[in-house]
Amino acid sequence: MKVLVVGGGGREHAIVRTLAKSPKIDALYCAPGNGGIAEQAQCVPIKATDVEAMVAWAKEHAMDFVVVAPDDPLALGMVDALEAAGIPAFGPRANAAVIEASKVFSKGLMAKYHIPTAKYRSFTDLEEALAYIRQEGAPIVVKADGLALGKGVVVAQTVAEAEEAARSMMADGKFGAAGSQVVIEECMTGPEVTVLCFVDGEHLSPMPPSRDHKRAFDGDKGPNTGGMGAISPAPGYTPEIADRCMEEIFLPTVAALKAEGRPFHGVLYFGLMLTPDGPKVVEYNARFGDPECQAVLSLLETDLMDIFQACREGTLDRLDIRWKHAAACCLVLASGGYPASYEKGYPITGLAEAEQTAVVFHAGTSRDEDGTIRTAGGRVLGVTAVGETLDAAIDGAYAAAKHISFQDMHFRTDIGRTF
Ligand code: AMP
Ligand code: GLY
Image (cartoon, rainbow, N blue to C red; front, side, top):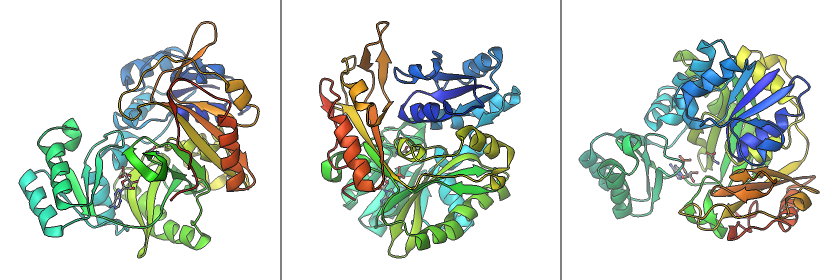
């Protein structure tokens, strides 16, 4: 088979490296890819959001299957467009990807189908939003409706902070159209856990639970980022909690989407909070998380291509998906200054040494003609180690990362250690 993966970050590198093991695949392509992905796949210089160009290229080069990994092209209907052109694709159609693309939609779905989540209201009018904030008091959470690169959420500790967040989203247009509607919700407490599930429209298969670290600095301080590291399995997600999540959250969500005429095929990301009242949904994503994907796929034993095909064809219930009884840790090495401004183009050394004991997924890198790898993004690399225990995996990732350096390299020293 000829397979194209859409995207160019650490998540896509993990997908490409995992697919590369499949005996079914003869040729792998990735658009746009990056400096590391270029080692396993042929990179195609098309932007992940350019639906028209992507479909045209896939058609012209006779792709047998396309995996759409990032949120934007899913929300833009890339899977719909590929399927309309006769090219089988992995990922939800736009009408199901909306579960991530609109928080107003996802909160409404949970309310209608009694799926546990924070109490909320949605607003298009700023004055009404401000009045609700004053009525409810702090702490309170303000969320932009649309996709905002994980930065459209403010957990406000004071009423003034919440008012300021609502104003900047709704009146100042900080997130453009994504912020013209906001969801204001109750602040929940408890450990967070991510459960990624393969979904085929009707059946679902949960992956090992994971946890990412969204803040830039140690001790969960500093601004939110796309994710500075991830571990799997996440401690604290007991079999009892897993059963409860399956009954109260996972199965009802998949059934709700089907009942709404929006069957979900792809990876459904459940961002959960284990509150004193039981597990509740913090957010849904319509794709693998990044960097959760890098940790979780490191534990997969089954052929990923078989799983992707089963998700598309509705045959997931006939597939036995196996996972290593081990743990994984993905440590993100970022550019100094990320998530704000940072320099690019610095040469990276020590990759081969790190690869002796870990897998280094590239997130934001480029490759010169002579093979030199350079920094090309905020999150640069995801050093990922597997161990028998979580401690061994964490130690393995840090030990391997010691070999790597580039100017202004920044990473957290407490991945997997603080919650
Ligand atoms: P989201 O983008 O919706 O995942 O939100 C980003 C982060 O904000 C989450 O990972 C939580 O840590 C936090 N958060 C979001 N919603 C709530 C909530 N209702 N209560 C407490 N924390 C929240
Ligand atoms: N790591 C969180 C996300 O991918 O949304």
